[in-house]
Length: 295
Image (cartoon, rainbow, N blue to C red):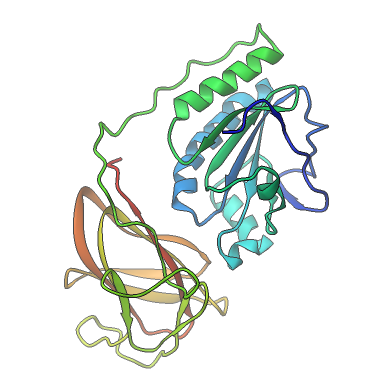
């Protein structure tokens, strides 16, 4: 963990959203929360409601939240995609696009999400990687703000509802491209799919779409509370995927923008076999993510 280290300055000429370019020098005297995230990351999206709430509560009290968008996939480097995601998630605080991992490297970061809290003197006083510990993070924010103004009136820290320890070893994140993925017993595909470094792309749009006669699909064996797919299309139009769970049709998913799509969500932890049928030649599938804790 990084503590009591001077926060590095932001590189120049990066693209900012919701704000003009900011500098650590210009933010001296404020509390600054740096959040490394990327918009298709399920862990980042689970943390997002807390960040939005802190912005609403503490921006007027001297806190500046800066989302450092460090892409995991190539499509997340596209500023139009990032701008759309910021609008879709209703993010109001500043976001900087760190496509070349310049800020990421300055902070020696290695995780999404990760938060660094910086005090009024520009020094890192708190560091947290991953989800969770939201009450602890908010307490650190309040302490940093009280160091700026001891008489500041602050709200009570909202207790975060716990999971009661109901967490299970879910299927780990699965990448589908050749760079980090390998098909096998957990996942595989049938039909006309082409494998690229980051994704697999369906090549045929003339085959039967129905689950009974479909020949083109991705097969996934999973254990989790939820199943998500990072996907998109290559031509700016849209496509539909048919979902079949344990041999039964469950949904038709419309894929258009490059993002994370929730495929399945269950009340109880379960294992199952999912088939994703495709009859379009423009679908790209990047990764599956899962959830092991009961909401």
